[in-house]
Length: 318
Ligand code: FAD
Image (tube, rainbow, N blue to C red; front, side, top):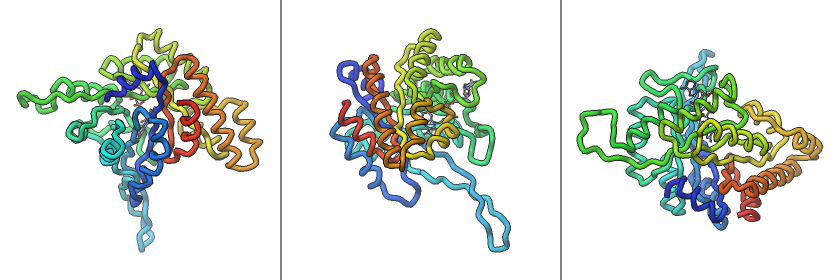
């Protein structure tokens, strides 16, 4: 089923979804199953699986010189999605990036998904490669997510890169895109960012999932601005329960989001990370409750590979 269909159904009874990360290379898929199984009782609507592009690492050689190596630390997005759908009969939503992909790579990736019966994707630009400041597209790749959305939309209309193909099969991907209630870090202003978000929707995106936020007011204001700008597709809020004191500095740095003063004060007073996790759980639960009360039908949780706190929240709320 498409994410938009799950969203429509959730209008009758609220639902939730989660995002998981592929395990680090060398680990077993069982850790993914162990993360998902405790959530099954609460019936997640769908499960997003992130995509991680290559990184450069420097290894010291015997002669003391550094060798630059390209590694992919978390491969396996497509395989994990296929395994989730097969094992749990839950829709899996792979993320797909502009970064590291040529248009040909993208087409082949989408063909694999189509053959596997995966008909949801989240289309993203991706960040700059580690050790580089700015995002750089492949020479035959996409520069922004709206271009990637257009390619997927074309495939949904049977338009492949090879225009000589005849009677080509039209795929049927439901396309999600990312958005940032507190503005994407590179956008000069929130209005500019929303203008580009509109471009993604006009290119064929069916729904939006937001970056995590810790102050619901920011989400409400963002949705309002999007509606005024003519963006009418579902905007699914993304939440994450914080679990450690270190995240107080890490999350704003990594995701460019702010923590409300009250949350920071509470976390700073906590005596250890167990106490922080309890605060994070309560905060995220309250955020979820307020969103649901305001009429949001579906809440998306970032699990970051750990679903324990999310289990507590969804058991109570869904
Ligand atoms: P875009 O929509 O392309 O926007 C990037 C920037 O360019 C923005 O500042 C925007 O305002 C601007 N812009 C957009 N279009 C144009 C245009 N046509 N001309 C000029 N400027 C433009 N990263 C991963 O590596 N793997 C993942 O699995 C992953 N999952 C994510 C899931 C969600 C829900 C979200 C919100 C983010 C995720 N990310 C992931 C992070 C994402 O890749 C980064 O935030 C990235 O920097 C931006 O991606 P985007 O698709 O929002 O980019």
